[in-house]
Picture 1 (tube, protein in one colour):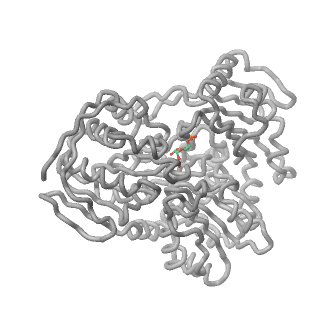
Picture 2 (tube, rainbow, N blue to C red):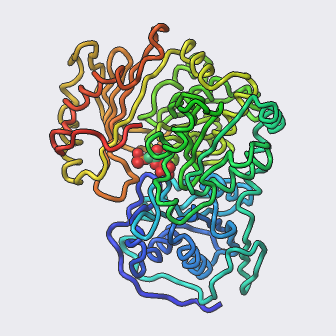
Length: 544
Ligand code: G16
């Protein structure tokens, strides 16, 4: 194999965000841009010669070209085997599973997740380590340092690989395996859940369902598992063929972007269960007939009922949630005497806790939940968890949620996003919030009295690494919270996220409208951060 070395100069904008590097496609198409980043990944790793790298992506625009480029750089850098999903496709949780199952050294996943795709939209790349999870901060920090000093990359002089043909080829000792993207994942799900019970419940009409794959990667996975294996009616999975531009949509499973599903679920002919997943298949939205389950509630309900699922029947060791996620799961953990951790936003922070067996389930407000079966959040896993739960409890989604609130109280919750804010303005807002922290405790607005105000810092209980500046928390004496942070996944300007949460224990008042219940806290948040005043906006871009 001929290896060629190309001189290059660094790009100064290759710092990985919450989940890898996400930029506009045109940024990635600049000469050497992707090549620099991939070489920088390999420069920051050690002892991978002859070992296995997993490669796949969510099929968005530029996925195929990027995979061919990465194959050549990986070959030149000395990997011994590449495992690639057919067509270059692997959902993020499926990639995590493949890395673990085939004991790979690591994997490269190509995705900008829930961000739109197409020539003028977003692309992304992230590196996952041998436990199948996103690289921890010490790896991404080293990688970023390498992007700043890189002067050359290496590429093998080989032909493009046929990504569509399942099978194995050998190029001068380098093994390239093109595998079925779905099979291993489907096998894993069958090991976790009671497929027979779900299948019988669907056959008996106890469960009817619609799943919106949003023209993204979960389509083939959901069609196979939900329709072919579990017997859901043909067409239950819709928008099921992955497209490079996600059909022109925004593959983010919330009620704003998955509006087709939302209309079905709030109509007179709603099925008993509805769900959607995102661009790369790691997010989920759970709905029942005329009800949306917040991701924070979904996590809490899963934790409370985990013993009903075969894989967790012996009990779970603990739970974790990202800091802005509501405290609903904490209440379950307290009642069941489980470990409970609050981590910064980013799935990578769950990896150590899962590896050490300190937790079994984890989740985030950003439509993510998962368990120790892989080291990524997993959209379809969450869907199957709920289907298994409904089949076991023989109850509609609304009743499961309502019973949970009766028992634990309800954490009424919403998130307001202000997108594409000028970066200087957004940093000004955070500085303004920071400057108030010391003076806030004791301050009162109506029912809300500030108990603490701080900037979240996390010390990993396994390796003692410290992650500081992870968002501003304002906690009130009645258990309510307002959290502010800047997103680490956007590609244009800055996105300010405001997370609002109110604890409702009074059982007569559990079903109130969340927008009304949270209005006073929304007003307090504006007083504190002045986002409307400073940006001239009148409303958030997205409310979830
Ligand atoms: C990623 C991370 C999640 C995080 C989410 C939102 O998800 O894996 O841990 O919660 O981004 O992050 P931010 O608030 O910084 O935009 P995904 O689905 O985009 O890979």
